[in-house]
Length: 478
Ligand code: ADP
Image (cartoon, rainbow, N blue to C red; front, side, top):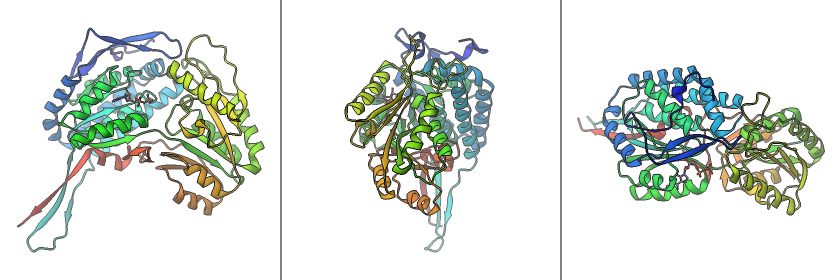
């Protein structure tokens, strides 16, 4: 990595405004080369919690303008260091550089959005029913926040949590994924440069996720846990938070269907499905996971999709032409292979699989499976790999039933020109987000989140800051 600003590559944890070294360290691996990029310190989670607790009172009493000004400075620094941040991100997460740069811009957009939202937090004055009584609602920061983030968006998932927390006046203990801690540490370095008060941001880098999780969820002075990751860990954290009744936001797994009707513009549908299915090599929670296609256009749609998949270039993310990088680790490759093998054993047809000539790295070839059914494991869980699966339907009711036949309810995509059908599906699909004749549903000003087992709460948008605020009612007698 040739960074313009080598200071961005931090390998110590960040606690109470200090970089904390440790004897015990863990390796961060580049998934494209299998080489060790850095040895990162195992952090002291208790020290991080104490620092956040100590900083909370003063930070909650800072003005909204002060917090907004800090966020704007941080936003500017993130953009000014975009090229370096993207290199760090590609090195540890594998995604193509262009996608990494897009992620840094996306990550920065949350900081900008919540800088403005900080200034718009309001309360209410209510009408009274008793003479002389004044009824008011205040909004106050919830208190210290624990944020636990995944590896697939090492920058955006961090800022989507930290920016609203800071805007609201909450100090944070952040535990980034142990697979991608370097991007989070670089963002913390820039937050420090932007003048964040000591202790307001603490980054706990650790491979002992379970112990860190226990410490964060069990601590009485942590008021809220915000988590993005697997459904299994989300459920565990929810149980662990019960004893101290914490506020909780969960953004968990998805199993997004893309429903393609015969009247859709097929070129648009294929382009949108490709963009969503193969983003980050298929490793996003809103990735198309099941492509449901109306029978009458099955042959035409599959041919178009296969043609597009054949054009994908797979390789290390630093190579400029590459669109599909490696998966995050060897276990991910094994998991995706098993899902594909199980589906083929159960009767799915392997219409296409790219041939890769890469000696190192955790790559999985872009693949197209047809004749997939909902009984197959590949339809029931997140694939998290560059594998497109096609399942057929013959009526709109069947499509709706198939789409909703999942414990997950994060995103869905609908392709049709029939406005009645768009409205019907908009009302009936059990998801938090719906792409209609398109698949780009990730922006700072939309409410991102799911229903059913996909989670609780929304991130981004004007709703996002509410997750970090609590209401206090004042009943003033006279
Ligand atoms: P993924 O399958 O996307 O890696 P995980 O849920 O395992 O999802 O990881 C998301 C984040 O949750 C990571 O930061 C990881 O270290 C953390 N994590 C994993 N297990 C636990 C746990 N028991 N308690 C708290 N955090 C955990």
